[in-house]
Image (cartoon, rainbow, N blue to C red; front, side, top):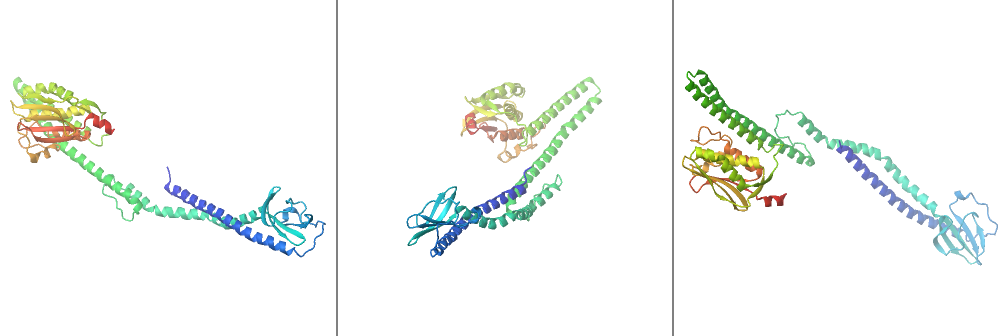
Length: 441
């Protein structure tokens, strides 16, 4: 696990040490310039102080070479060296007058030459001496700063911990919450930088609260919806047990079979609705689906149901090249529910028509009937789970259109309920064509 506190400490200390090192280089450069000015002045003063002295050709006794800072060389007017303070030093012959920097042997030398009437005086100094002096000056400034780095680290560690304390308090508050405590987190005392995190957590808690409320409502509605058919099954079973004749028993068993069929259908609808939940972790794979072919298959499968109800089931328009990207199984479930609802509410002798057409940049799968239709004020409510209009057949569960709505939302499709040309209801599902879906992937 990556520690934010440790990362901040390493980053800040790294930045501080880098600044100190850059400052050390700058201090060294400034110290070197100052040492050059001072040492050049000393070279000149030393050369001037020797202008009145007499020198012979005997070499004086010099201190060890590693202990000297200056080397003196005297020349006569004919270029003959009269004096060399350190015979073992390697200096060039007579250099140009004034200040100059030359390389002699392995060292760079700073030389000041002054011409007099009968001789030339040269005073030289190794540049390594100046560099050493500048380095010492820079280290005298930099070392105390580097010694302070551990102390700065401790101070930074403490301050970062103090700054992150509101997050620790927030984490402890979240940890101490009960599983059902979904009220928003307080942002009192939370620093501005942590407010987006608190707002995001509150948004998550709000969505979770809504999801749990919807789940509780669904469970309550499902229990209520199942109670009636299960109670009816129990009563029908009791009637079967009390039947005195074979005919009564056969009639009771027939009613029992019908009740079981309705209960099974209700359970299947509940499962279908649950699979369309947005939090479903295993969504079905989507493939290319031809809406016209899907409509033909549905017509063939549901034709016996329509004939049994004396309903004319057919198609008015099936467009060519009507492909979309969808889950074929759930899409067929939505279409079956629309057709089943239309057959259920259309009186005998009525008509249910399917159509697949293009309009407004979408492919529309429509089911129209000649039934009583749905009042405009009721069209939004009939999409709610378990909602049933007054006068609805008693064997309806109120889940058919809710399932269609959930499947439409799952596919990003539009669901429209309006009046059909024959006075009944027209339910339309509008999908993006397959070519448009491919361009957005």
